Amino acid sequence: MTNPLHICVGSENKAKVHAVSEILSEYPHLAHAEVTGKHADSGVSDQPKSLEETVQGAMNRARDAFPGNGYGVGLESGLMRVPNTKSGYMDVCAAAIYDGKEFHLGLSSAWEFPDREIIRSMVDEGLDMSQAINKIGLTKNPAIGSEEGAIGIMTKGRIDRKEYTKQALRMALIHLEQFE
Image 1: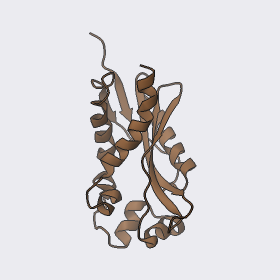
Image 2: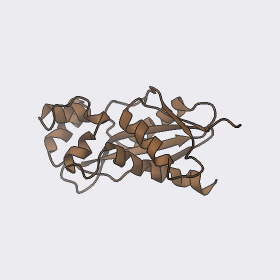
Image 3: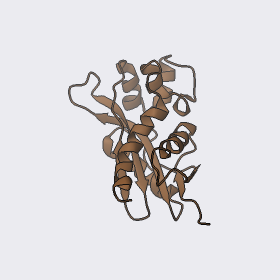
């Protein structure tokens, strides 16, 4: 009997680990993989403020999580500058899958907070998203990022953190599916 494929997620955030576990059922060559999560340092700020920083954080987590065989998965959400938006920024999730040699990247859809105070708190005060939305009273849940996320609040449950993360994963998995 062969050992199952091991996929290690560079996070202990349950929304991220569950997103990876659930998405794999859509891919026959990955459906029976063993998925674990572990703490992995992003190497970037707690609240990334550029697309470059967000992607780098995902790559750092994926590399740190790489189990030696199989795949390391890194997921990082962060802000990026977007012209013509009300606040100047949108949030996006980056997924990086590391196979020991190269990275396979994907991004989720991007979205903008309707309340500019949240962005100001993140950009000017250095708060992360959970801290910023707690500060303005959007939620009192300090663990919002491990649950429905700010996106869940903003869309009134139409999309949550796990589904948002799955979007980025599907885009990164395009590379792995094409070469299997």
